[in-house]
Each structure stands twice: as C-alpha cells, then as structure tokens.
Image 1 (tube, helix red, strand yellow):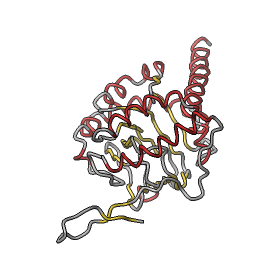
Image 2 (image 1 turned 90 degrees about the vertical axis):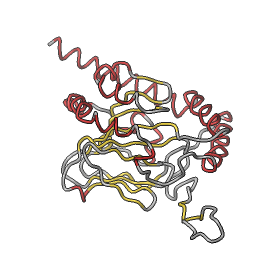
Image 3 (image 1 turned 90 degrees about the horizontal axis):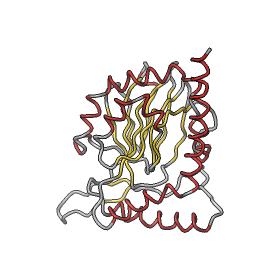
Image 4 (image 1 turned 30 degrees about the vertical axis):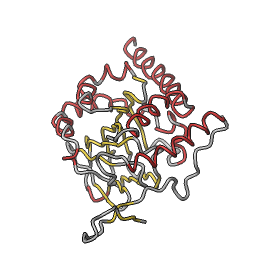
Length: 276
C-alpha cells in the first residue's frame, strides 16, 4: 500500500510507502502490566508524529549521502572485521538472539541468528567492548547511537517478514562477512531488496515490513547499529524521552538481565580455559 506526499497542483505525485503498525502473521507483543500497556499506547501515538516530522523523509532504504558519517564507518570496516574474526573463534558459544530478547522468538526460535552485543538502550557491555575497542571507537561517529552488536545469520536461516517495534530509530548494517553467491542472501525492506557487500553500509527503517535470508553455505555477519531518527520538534524531544524510558520496560530489562547472565558464563568459561 502506498500514499502520495503533498505536491504542487502541476506536479506528478510521488508514491510514498505506508508504514503499517503491525505485521500479518506476527503476534503483537503483549504484557500484562498496565504501565507497559500505557507506555505502548504513547509509543503508537508518537510513531505517527515521527512520520510527519522526519527531517530525512521516510523511505524504506536511505541514500547513504543523507548520513555523511556513514563513510567513516565504512572506512574502518577492516579494523572492525579483524575484531569480529577474534569474536568468531567462539562462535558456537555466542547466544541466539531469542536467548537474549525473548520477544524475538516471534520470528526466530533457533540458534541460526546469533549476536555479540556491545550496547543498547542505555546498557553497555564493558567486557564485550573491551574485546572490540576499534569497533566501539568507530561507532562513536554515529549521532544518536543506541544499539551496537554483531549480527550473525547462519547458513539456511530466514527471518520471516516482520516490523521493528518503533519508528523513532533507524538501522545500519555494515557488511563484514558476505559469502558467495551474493544472489542467495539479502534483506527486503518494504519492496526494496538489498544484498550486502563487505565494507558497504546500508541504512534502512526497520519499522517497515522486512525480512532477511541466507541461503549460502556460510555465515553472513554484519555490524548492526540502531540510532535515533533525525526529527523536528516536538517529535525530537518525545523520541529522546521514549528511548531513555525504554530501559525501564520489561522488553529491555529482560534483555539486559539475559545479557549479563550470558556474559558471566562466557567469560567464566574463557577464564577456566586459560587456567587449564
């Protein structure tokens, strides 16, 4: 479904994709807490304001020229890749995404989608950042940084169509390991399909329906970053406020607790291995 942006009377209408606030076949997140239900009601209202007051429009996939700092991330991709290679020496010990964020179970319930998490929504993994200082330094060039992690899509893994929880953030993928044949992997955002390239960044709005797949015989890995969407006032203030309050919601608290528990096991096993 598309709508048309306002144009002069003699202009040719330009179709603009419509963000649907839900995805067919994906059960909505449900929480019993009245506070959480009230929070999600506010989120739904702010999402509509964000669409109206975006400084950068609302395309499913952006032209990287809109975000000049993306060139700095691409410049550092080899240093980031070197740190990823070190992390992947323990790939089998990395958590499935659904093991950290239980709500992800709506789209992935196996270990075909793994992650190595550096930060998100006010929480920082100091131990993981210590393993990836170049990655962390490169991401400081991103205004409104929210989330940083490595996202690993194993061979044969398909993430079905879904939409992100909130349109006040945009997402960057930096290709780090992109196996061949490239025609056998990709991400669809709305109607646009992008195929990752090593050293190349793509920026998209995950509030549009999207899906990703890897039909190659090897893992695909990207640097996965979320950052605040540039908005005009008052949407900019409300967006900032909601993102700072998100840490108090069950969605984020559970993820933080699961991440801390995983880190404790991961680094305890590393220490035990060194002491043998």
